[in-house]
Amino acid sequence: MLAIFNVIAPIFALMALGYCAVRFRLFPAEGIKSLIAFVNNFATPCLLFHSILTSDFRSAFNLAIIGPFYLGALICFVVGIFIARRFFVNTPGESVSVGFSGTFTNTVLVGLPIMQRAYGLDSLPVTLSIIGLHGAILLSIGMVTMELVKRDGRSLGRTLLLAAKRVLSNPLIWGIAGGMIGSFAGLQLIEPADAFFLMMSQAVVPAALFGIGGALNEYRLSDNWKQAVVASLIKLVLHPAIAYVLMVWVMRVDMEIARYGILLAAMPPGVNVYVFATYYNRGTSVAANTILIATLASAASISAWLLILGP
Image (cartoon, one colour):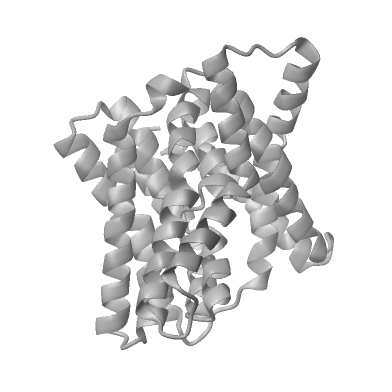
């Protein structure tokens, strides 16, 4: 337990620092968006590029891990929609938004720091192989599903085009693509360039955690907190549980490797669930509450998963 505490404590201490800094006006609230933009648009793409370029990324692209992760996410999406529609009597569009809230993982701002802290650099190739497909797969599924169930939106063709544009314009994709191209081409960075990417990579963990902690000040509990609790449980418990069963029991993946995908599945939902909800103006309060509740609850749930998987 002490080893797990040592892994988790610095992570959530940085998040708490970010929250308190904004809460007590020691850091400007408007600066948080800029900080997160720096992490997403500059520091993390550099980390992805450098990590993929300097690791054996091709051997880490393991369908026995990637497949269960995304199959688990798809099952959670369907379960979330069903519960929201059947038990909370939401409209179809609102139900899709709730389902998406329990599906889309915060792989970058929370996932990467925790994976590095828990399992070190050895976890990065597998982690990055999942991150590389995350937005492309889940955002496309969410947008297409929403367009199919609501009647006042654009055509399905335009939705697919918009989803493709959003994916291709994401700097994270640029970092991943650049790293893969460089890896296959046998590119080796000279010392100043290698030092530059290494320094940018080292900025990801503190900046991301401080930023997500500060961003939590934007969210408040609302009357839809019960739905948010359900979506949080789906994300923090059901998704990693499905991944565990499929990877370990069905695919027989060695636990030393499978735990990378399982722990990443246990991360809380990312800010994109709120962006998704506000874009379609459906289930926005549930999305905001899910981010708040799940991020706070993940301190306990991630500790539990680390206990199961082994730190």
